[in-house]
Image (cartoon, rainbow, N blue to C red; front, side, top):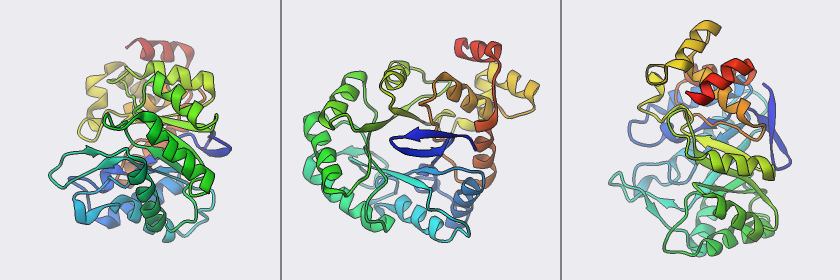
Length: 286
């Protein structure tokens, strides 16, 4: 698979998002582990998780633990796999999502993630979402401290606007390596953040790049240009969507969520799908 850069690390141009393996409607663990193994077989070397990918208070960090088990049981070399996790979201168990961006919480969450992942330092640690009750500078200051202490190797942010991206990069002393925002054919309001990341040379990681768990399968039905080009090229509309994102900027690394070996294998093939300028222009205007 072609590669792209996060900080000083080269990763496959398509990553894997672990959320569907651990929240509501999650499958049997064996299928999720098979999906991780299929991703690795396809050349995926970026796996995105979070401590909040779980169901209830007695299940915290389910996805981190699952990813660790999947890597441990893979038959090949995983030394080049970058596991990115996040802290700052909470899930009380009623299906809702809470926030805690306090420095004390983020540092405790990082320590717990370190144990679940079984590593000495987390490859990429990301602030999951701004907490309106906590000054953003305080939350990012916690990431700076974790970097300085060596508990994390790289720092990123998620669900951030352009002002927060600039602020985070300044607080981190120019060490911000990634921004993870929602972006898909149906959700394009993060174009400004993508362009800023391109200028800064910061990786932009689209989450839900295929439209989210309930809508990904019907991407072609909702966005007919992607289906038409996919049919003409003999590939899925989902592959076309990911190839379109890759063509937007060399800093883009989509992280489609998957819990099925066949879907992540299909997504991974987008790394080698080159759109013509005419195809890209049509999709960009669709």
